Image (cartoon, rainbow, N blue to C red; front, side, top):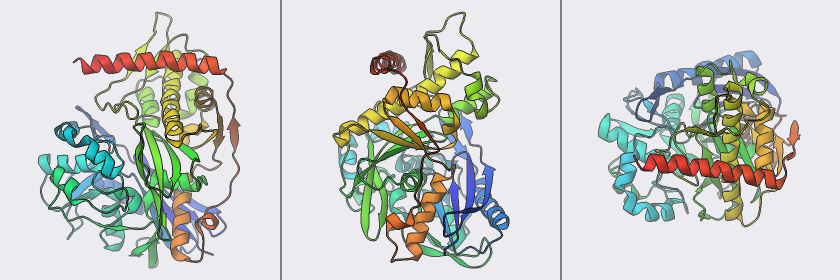
Length: 477
C-alpha cells in the first residue's frame, strides 16, 4: 500500500498531507503564505518563503504521520511565475502571482492576435495566464536565468529536474491545446522565443526523486491545484463539474478527451494526461473569494471567515456588491474592473455589506455555471464544491439559490492534495486505472435551492446591471 506526501502549494498557504493506501490521512501541516498586494494591480510572493513553506510543511506532516512515505506529489498554483538561476536555484525575481494585473499593457499590445491565440491555446488573452507575466518580468525585472511557473522551480529544488506538467503548461498561452507542446510562434509573440523552457511531462509520470522529507523517494503526479480538485471530486466524465472556493473561486467542468474550445469566453485547458490519454476541461474564474473575505477582515467587518454566517444579515436590503477586487474574468474579461457596492442607504451596515459580498461571489459563480452549460449544450444539474469557504452556509445557500441546482459539499478540506495523491498512485502503479486511483466519497452537506427561479432571475438581472455599470464607469476613465 502506497503512502504519499501530497503538497498543495497555494496562494494563501501551503498544505502538506500524508495519505495512506486506504485514503486515510495520517498527518497534516499547514503554513500561511501571505501575498503582497501592490499599487497598480501587482501581487507578489517571496519565492524563498514559498519553498520554505513546502519543505517545512512537508517535513512536519511526515513527522506527525509517523510513517515512511513512498512518494511525494505536488499541486501548484498554475499561473504564478518567477525568474531563477538554473545553476544555483536562487530566485532572481519575486514570484508574480496569478492575480497580478501588471501585464495588461502586454496583452493590449497583442490584442490583434487575440483570436489566433485563442484558437491555438484554448485560452483568452489575459494577464491571468503565465506568458504575459513572464514577458513582464523579462521587460521590467531581469533578463537573467530562466523564467517559469513556480512548480518548475520547486520541483527543481526537490529533484534537480527541469519540468512542468501538461495541465500547468496548458495555462501558459504559449502551448497548443491539441498536443500541449510549446508553440514557437506564440513564444515569439510574447518575446519569449529564446527562453529555455522546462520539459512538459504527463500527470502520471515519475519526474525524479527527493530526499527532502526523509529517505529517497520518487516525485510523481504533478498537476495544477484546480485540476487536482476536479479529479478528487470524481469529475471523471464529460459534463461533471466542481467549484473550489479558495483565494478565488474556480469552476471546472470535465469536457472529455477532445480539445474542445469554448464559445462562451471560458478557458479550455488540460485537466490531466494519464496513460497517454489527455482529458480536458472548461474553467471559469472568480478572482476574489477568500481574498474578498480577507478584505472584509482587514476592514474589521469580520474577525475571520468563521464569523461570516454569524455576521451576515439575513437580507441585504437592496445592497449589491460586485467584488471585482482583482478584476473580472469570464464572461467579462476586464482586468481593469474595480469592485463596487450599490443600493446603500443610511441604514446600511457591515452586516448588509458582508452578505452582499457573499452574494456577489455566488453570482459570479452562477454566471460561470451558465457559460459552462452553454458550452456543454446542457444545463448543470449538480455542482460539487470544496475549499475553506464551503463552511459558510450563507455562501453555499446563495450558490444553490442563484444556480438553481443542488450543491454537494466535498467531505474533506483536502480535495487538492487528495487529487494529487490519486495521480501519484497512478504514477507508481501502471496497472491502476484512474478510476481506481480516486477514492469514493459522499457529500458532507447538500444544499437545495430555496429561492424560486423567478427570485434567482430577478437577483441576477439586478446584479448584472450593477456589473455593467461598474465596467462601463471603469472603461470611461
